[in-house]
Length: 413
Image (tube, rainbow, N blue to C red; front, side, top):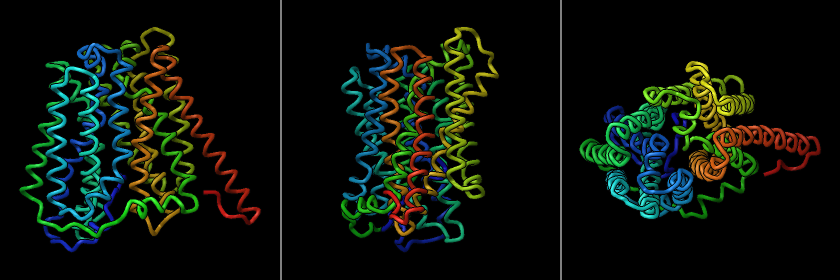
């Protein structure tokens, strides 16, 4: 998620030394890598985890939904509660707790205990990511601020391309518990690095939760945010069950990690290309193209799964890469639209969009948990249908906006 520039508004305005900006950005990226890996890694070993906990894959998928939903709901609450806490202290403690809760997840012997530790880990992640972006912006020279943010948030994208495949390798060589323990170790190492490198920085002014959420009253914001939830639900309905999908497509076991890496490369490329295309063509055409490509990719994979025959490695890889690219192409365009709708509250709407992303991941995983019982083709078909619904939402809201403009009425919110 290279372009998710989630910032704590007050922290971004704190005077701070400028000379440490570049080094600090890379250290902070280590933390976002840990957060991103933690958020998405379960898809790399869901079948093994379900077997280890003696539950179905659909039930084990609830741990993904729990993490994403907790992040979405707790992020604004935690930002409000911690707005005055010193930044280095907050960053170090959030990473330390993320590490501790992942180690606790690795020791769980029941699904209920695992879900509780995943919720706790999500709370720690929600405390870290927005403040990492804020601190990176505060430490960087103004002329290098965008690059510092891209480095920090780029850790999330690298997590998809490298962290998830690495988690699959570790779970195959050892077990799924070792993968979660690895995330815990990375988090603790990042906490130590942040403590060693980051300068002391004070907290910001207290901003109430009501003030943070007041931006939802702005015209257009509540028209745009539901698309974030719907679009992310579309691509993440099948994502937690990626290993089962690849096995149904008869991808050799030795190539599963390669396919996870292909998805991550597609995600990285889609995110980057979307940012450039949004600047040149505008956000709506980019979104239309992304959801159309997503519907085709997931629909094509559904067809291959239904055929029940080997699909050809390279053809399947192309569809997997398209799935990843279209999934992560949404965010830059949606951020662009939200900032245009509320330019004076850009940090707040971007943070709310991040909550919408995780809410969509939670909803999508829940929908996928229901659909997977009907088979992999139905699971992928559900994702494709949700992508088409996203296209329909764009058309519907666009028509309403044009009608309001023609009549001289206020834009629908």
